[in-house]
Image 1: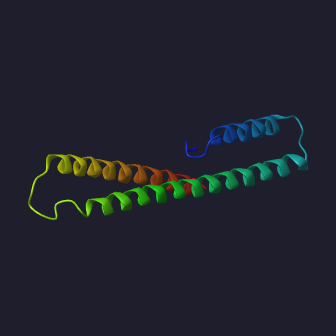
Image 2 (image 1 turned 30 degrees about the vertical axis):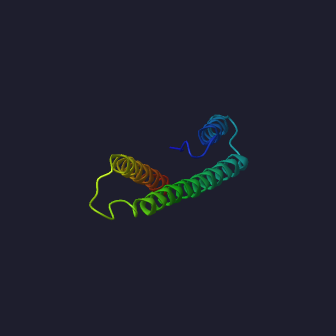
Image 3 (image 1 turned 90 degrees about the vertical axis):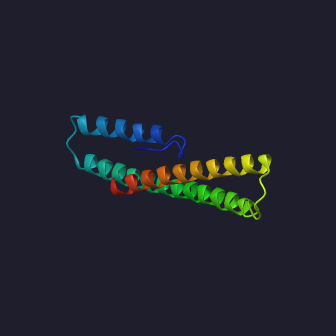
Length: 118
């Protein structure tokens, strides 16, 4: 499971899988097969960790969005007057916060899934 956060990640995983299939299905039964298998395992681990790092960076970006939107909301409702434009804008900001929180949660679940897949 590779994320869209890591462009080409699925291609890399497919290439690793293809090479593994070719090597393991070959008629050769030598020590080089074990070395290739180990090298591919290490490459998969490296790719997994690289994707986790990218996912965590994406989650931090969602956190940054939430912080900015929350700060912008600080000025909302400081008094009891109701300005339709202000209320509509605040409503949209709350929706954006919810969307960023949901995306951040999805990203972190994906990172955890990659981590536990090790």
